[in-house]
Image: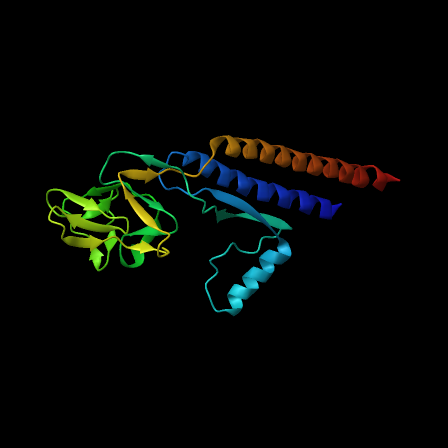
Length: 228
């Protein structure tokens, strides 16, 4: 009986986590370069083994902690490419193939597929949040006047002189291209996410019914059978 309660409760925890993942996907369906998350369920034993391995390696526990339930769900990236859309904006870049843009520097550096950039007040290529886009040796000082971008991410001025090259992390030679005037859209399929959300809600409700049923049985066992 108690095992049934723990099993149902762990299922509700996992489904609650999955619901958060799905909701985040839907919220970012229109965010350029966003990669949907998918919920991956793990058993208690798998979670324990993963945590022990991290501890033995002397690393900080960056993974989810061991939960006092039988299973849980954690988010994993879906790295499939989203559709590429023409914008006509020369400061919009899209990566075809593997790779990510590096923005920010030092401990604040991060990788992104969102190529919607601006030229900031310093005349450097940056995100709308002010993070500097990284080139070969740091921030990229944009040329005045006309310029173009080659498929390998090199910025060339009107005279054909190479200004800098955008740093593309995780790229593969011959397989990664940078397109100017395009943006990669989110790879979230809103209809699929809504279907997953409904199915997940039904599973959550089913576990609720299991808990209610077990609770009712325990109530009868304790309060009625105990009188005999």
